[in-house]
Image 1 (cartoon, helix red, strand yellow):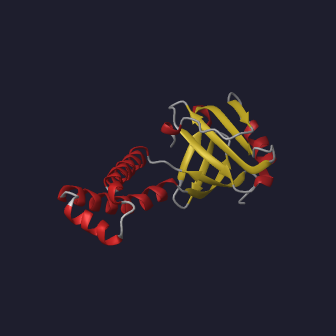
Image 2 (spheres, helix red, strand yellow):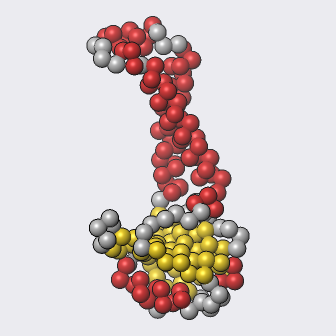
Image 3 (cartoon, rainbow, N blue to C red):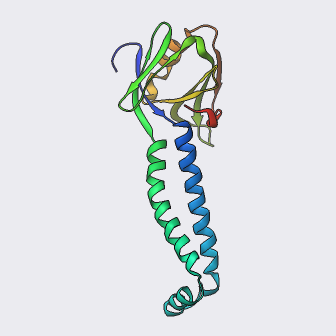
Length: 186
């Protein structure tokens, strides 16, 4: 922790068009592999030799090429998509007129004037016990949403006190996890 007003957080970043493109590409590859798998249903319970003969003699060449392209594409796109959606470590600093989030791959400011709503999720299990994960969504006037999770749950009270000092912000608190406008997530 750098100062009294700084907190260690993890930020889930979303690059608007790249992340969506990778997701849809991954979905297309997965669906292609699933449809191609349906072609192998007649030989599902056959011996290995019959399965090979079925693949060589019955499956058309374009399906074999589509299977190869889909398999390789899926294996390439999946790690890229996962890497884009992982949480990145950062330091959140409360300043007078903005909230600064800086980290290794994350560096941006959220001006207080642009904040419309702040959603705080203190997630609980089905038994009602806290999961000790405080997630905050900062929603801006431009409809961009930034998702931040506090790394050290014991600092949640201090974090919330500092966050409540800002005026004219609509606070919503939940004890379950919801995703606030994931398509507009920054």
